[in-house]
Length: 123
Image (cartoon, rainbow, N blue to C red; front, side, top):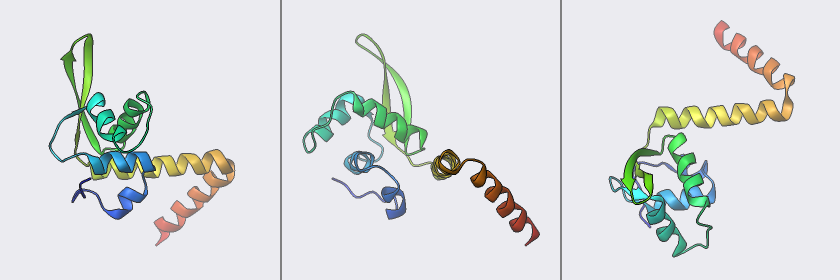
C-alpha cells in the first residue's frame, strides 16, 4: 500500500474502512477499472466483486476519484483515477452529516441550523 500526499488523516478517517483501503492501494495518476481494483483489494481482503463498483462510485461522488468512460468488450466501462477535489469532498461530508442529523433529529436539527446561521450572521 502507498501513503498518499493527497490525503490527510482527516480525510482517511472520514472514509469507511474499505474506501480507505482502496484509496491507499491506488497509485496517483494511474488509471483503474473496477476489475483492476477488485484484483488489488482481493489480494488482502475478501470482498464481493459487486461491492467494488459501488465503493468506486461513492469515492467518485465524494471527489476523491475522477471517472471517465471507455469502450470495452461488451459495452462501456468506467475508468477511475485518484484526484482529490477538496471542495467536492468537503461538500459531500457536510451534506452527508447534515442529512443524517436531519434524518435522526428532524425539525429540531433544522431549527438549530437556522438559529446557528442567524448567530453567525450577527457576529
